[in-house]
Length: 124
Image 1 (cartoon, rainbow, N blue to C red):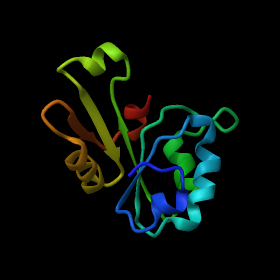
Image 2: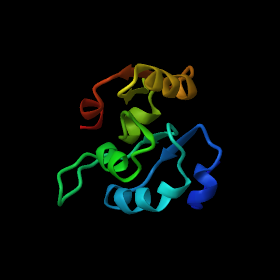
Image 3: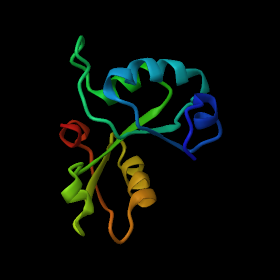
């Protein structure tokens, strides 16, 4: 489901994919905090570092929504690589099982997802 309604996006979902421009990660996370339950998985797909704090986006999400489990999904974003047959992505989380869950949901014949505990490396 795609929606801009934070309550609808969060309530009752096993996983939330957060695709928000990096300057709006903190405010969006703060606004969705009331709707996120303990252990709910939030997968951040944006890249960036907060200008004032130099925090990574998953660190901001975790700070604003401490009850959530945060993971990242990243990979090529240049059109040529996205259009190619070799479309590799990386999923990362503190818990291996969370990264593997993200992998299982996104992987298919043309979208290969590898896992890693190195969330910072995946992001940068």
